[in-house]
Length: 98
Image: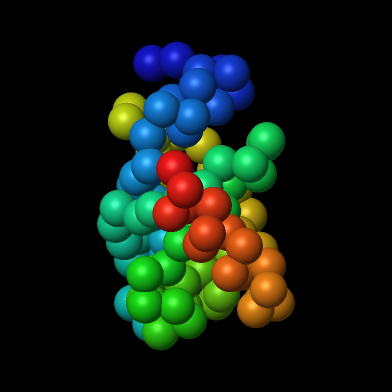
């Protein structure tokens, strides 16, 4: 299975949803779920539909090591939350424009 950065970025550029895997903050188990995202250059912004109450978001805050899967091509990342309201609004608007 190919895992090159170019191939992953190519996949991300073609889709609006990916699967992420986080570690449950209480269970410690791996949890996979589809999420929406915005790709901006080499940055990937994940959009929690229910904001900071979204369970995968809360899990990523506790353990920021996540894995993404873009239709069969995956990679590990460290999640960094965006808490600035203006920046969050900007990314949501970018998603809506896609």
